[in-house]
Length: 239
Image 1 (cartoon, rainbow, N blue to C red):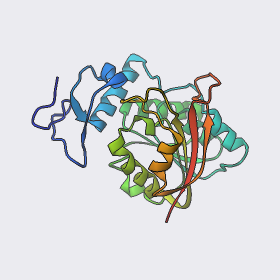
Image 2 (cartoon, rainbow, N blue to C red):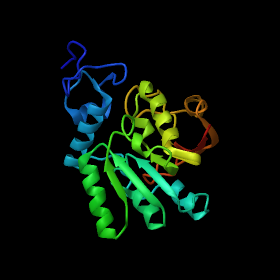
Image 3 (spheres, rainbow, N blue to C red):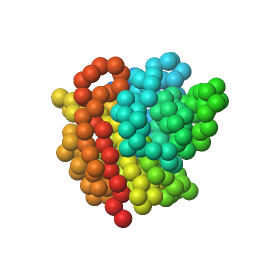
Image 4 (tube, helix red, strand yellow):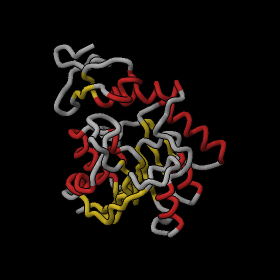
């Protein structure tokens, strides 16, 4: 299936500069079940819902990421207000909440939200969980958070959407806030579809206009291997 008259093949609505179309490729194509051009948000929503329905969630590592645990244990991060985009099954959000952090998590997938709410109830953990489009929504949450934490969210975004995402990070953070990201490191050859990969220079180029970089340090993916194939990235907003 291909796009017709500049319309998304999933929702049928017009593509635009603000909400551009991207090719449906890679793992997303396997989950969406078609090719062509579609809004990123339509691809993301449908791929996530299909993945949860099939039990195919390669983004889940089944535990809080070791780099996040280390930051908390070393008290680099102490209890504060945290926002997490794309929490998935919620291992990181639940870990932070159980250690005294006030956590708000937002996901585009209704199923992910239902899973996380149920897990929070079963564990007796308090979380604010919302269904939302992180890049285009959330204006009401501006300047409310001390930390924006993400694991593997940026790597789902096509290049044309990344600057808007950085602006969203900055809008959510308070003046002395901090971005903490676990981001997929370089792959050879570089992938042209989700999940994307990033060199240290890629991250520097993306963040340096709006964020002061504190560190870009190699870390593990979290799936169990010891290869340092991801980046722990920390940065503060420039005001």
